[in-house]
Length: 166
Image 1 (cartoon, rainbow, N blue to C red):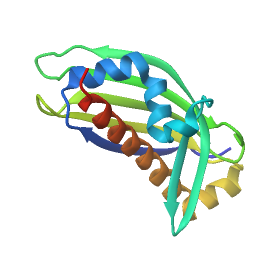
Image 2 (cartoon, one colour):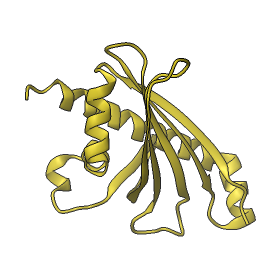
Image 3 (cartoon, one colour):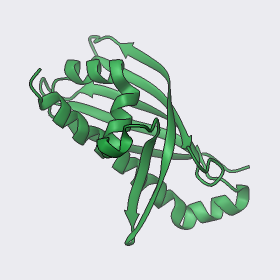
């Protein structure tokens, strides 16, 4: 059995928390899907994509994402309001070749006009002991880079979507 590995990445969106929270709470799967693939290519797909260019080689796979829960934490005296979206994903086509990920996307205000996206997740490398060796040499860096690209894609998409006039 492989030992779970942790990844934490973050980005921000230059829009108020309430607008970001509303969009993600109402349309999380659509945001993830549209953020990670070109819309014209995505029209008939229900998967999202993780991808990274690592040492000049494009590594990527379509992923099936499921939203397990959305928690709203109201503002308190010591803490800002926060939304937590609990996610799981795996490769849509080759689930045994890529790690299964459990993650929590926390969304909270940085300022009145900026919102933080903070993703913390755990994955287990496939292939047991061999997978752990591969992960320690190269896999973890690829996994971290692809998750960082995922959160960056979401931030870029939300910046553009929330800037559109209603």
